[in-house]
Image (cartoon, rainbow, N blue to C red; front, top):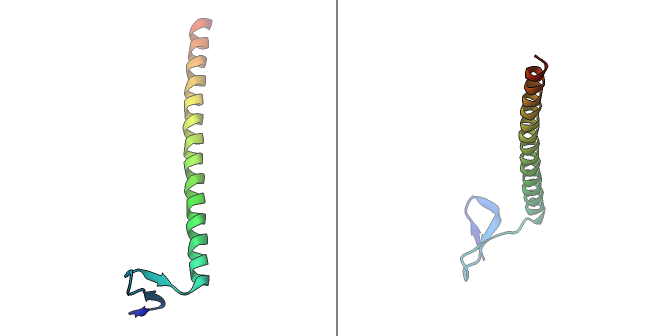
Length: 73
């Protein structure tokens, strides 16, 4: 195994030419950050969908109110 220049926790496997992280704690932190980022993205997507639904419902309510006003006249 060869050390990756400039990265003390990374080594290169000469057979496969792959880079391996030898610092399991940093890897676990990376996985946790990636999971949190994915969860945050999912949450934002859900909020955007909820907002879109609310806008549609408000437009429907406005249309119904306009109909009521027209029918009352």
